[in-house]
Image (cartoon, rainbow over all chains, first blue to last red; front, side):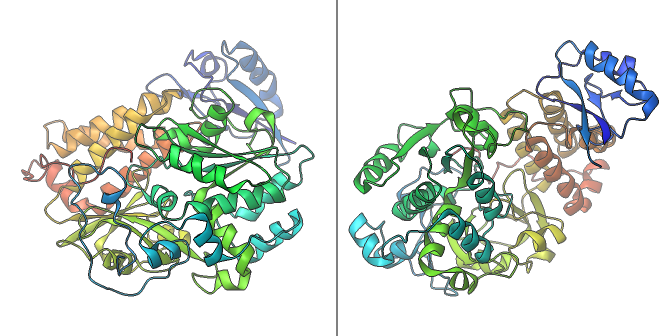
Length: 72
Length: 440
């Protein structure tokens, strides 16, 4: 299974903690909303990134960030 | 009766001030009459008796037969996305829980009036499609969703639905007339008691929709086609259209044409031929806006493009909900696009940041370019960057549509763009909008 970050654009309120915790995966746009590799979905998370990614998911005040597992 | 098969909406649907009133059109190329057969023959909607005499009884099918038949017919949804209808039917038919069938008749595109025209001209064909699909899938309920409004078709449709005494009663529900309210998840949200705003998917409505039941949301034109396919078969349906997009399409045509209205054409008819059915262009056309306000500009050089999803995409445009709005050469395409994007920004449900903040920013950049302001060059650089920022980052496709409209405008009106960026005055930039900006 490949794991990727995914943002729920309705739940996201631009707190920006995710970009602080995962600067390699998440940028913020000019309005403070997270930019992932492919719109709402990030690029595959490496094994080393998964702990930080889980921390970012838990830190999101609006629970807008999640990790999605897909077959490919 | 109108010899071209154009539905003159002035009789029935309120029109905006800036659209010319339709006149009787000259007979042009004959266009097929499937959905609009009753109206074409009688000049008004068939009542239930005439309708049943014209089309014959609705056949009884099993769910598998229906899915196979619609698959063999190659029917694609007429709500804009062009998704294969049989796939959606199959998804709902395979669920254990009894589904809800929603007929989506609240077109969110101000430029589109084909669903209003269909409800006006062939209401019983739409109700046939709902009844057939609801009965065949064993639906727990069926809903016909239309635009709310004091002069809307609600009371008439409720009367017509009640006359039929079908096995699954059809409830007619009014939905707020907003751009995103008719988006599939927004509609499901509203019909489940929530606001008419899009929700994050998954879950898809076919998995969990109205009241938690698996829900089939189909455009009313799609359902009307199903009612005809069930009677006449898949080979008959494929006699018109292209292998990839069989059947006929209802196309709304407005802007610089002699007789704005709705025409039924075989899919694959060229943009030019469809416009000719509305009396032809009322002046020299520089570009055609296709697929509605979240659609795309098609340059006049591509006017021979066939009306199919693949051909329009290949031409850099979009079929979407088929609407064709020719822009006359005297109008400013950039100024028009700026107003359209401003309109789309105002229609945002305000739920997703990139849409809530991005669309007004894109509209302001476009307006600065259209006005030839001193900031125009910077606005253009910002705009290119912002178009990437708003694409693919909303729960629904509204920001994507606005970005596509803008990108194609920068492309198709590239000569104008150069003039605007170098401060050459544009006489047409302040001229009034020629496209409708109200829902009908």
